[in-house]
Amino acid sequence: MGRLAQGLRKTGSSIAQVFTGTRIDEALYEELESALLMADAGVAATEFLLADLKRRVKDSKATEPAAVKQLLAAALTELLKPLERTLDIGRASPTVIMVTGVNGAGKTTSIGKLTRHLAEADCKVLLAAADTFRAAAREQLAVWADRNQVAIVSQEGGDPAAVSFDAVTAGRARGCDVVIADTAGRLPTQTHLMEELKKIRRTIAKAQEGAPHEVLLVVDGNTGQNALTQVKAFDAALGLTGLVVTKLDGTAKGGVLAAIARWGAERPGGVVPVYFIGIGEKLEDLQTFDAKEFAQALLG
Image 1 (cartoon, one colour):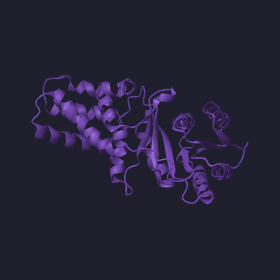
Image 2 (cartoon, rainbow, N blue to C red; image 1 turned 180 degrees about the vertical axis):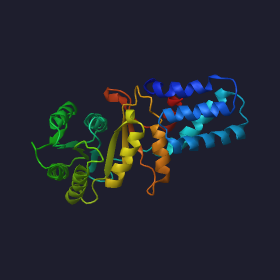
Image 3 (tube, rainbow, N blue to C red; image 1 turned 135 degrees about the vertical axis):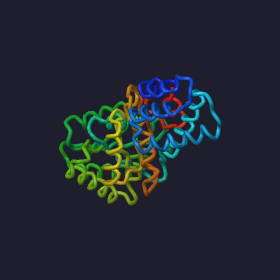
Image 4 (cartoon, one colour; image 1 turned 120 degrees about the vertical axis):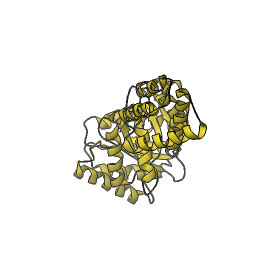
């Protein structure tokens, strides 16, 4: 909780300042609206939270700004709660996880941390170096495989779909619990590369019926509303099952999770859960998402 609060300090300080006054009036709500928008909560989530907060203030007959802050924490927790879900390993053998994201989001590092997380839970993990576009991507993943003492399937300059197929087939043959496929980072506007991702998804399904069981998107929390744009684009192309939101330490845009939650509430298939959040460089800084802890840390 302390690490999370420290990481979200930049976002939280601007929102917390709203509650330093002595009166609950329209000016307070206007300041809060500005602070939430500045934190990249987005228009839809901001309007939703303000309406919910005003109702809570009226029902509770709150008279102190500090009490309003607590009510906002409760409203934010309720909004974020549907994002809270545990990554379910073991419903298939192996459980195949396809990991996507744009370059620089922290995708390969998140895979390394997730591998450690699974290895510590006594899961036998196999990594697939299906990012054959980026120079050194294979080597970077191999370092994490070595560090976590897990096997890796890779080909120099090979076809990403073929590498993924081989890895899933090998995972089944070796009795692995989890196969994680690292894919090339790409912008959702790069249509030909998004088609490549769809091909990888189809090929994994050929290697194992029902796979991939998880399609995760790693997004950089620093990018704010752009992160939501990425979530929408990758979801439209692949049908996302979960998110990893990285680099929330030191960002002033932590409110984007509220925007993702509000969008998810309107999504036909329901919300895309946030399995993990990254709040630092250390292995333990990849944490499972807890809505209440996040809301309290965000509001200081």
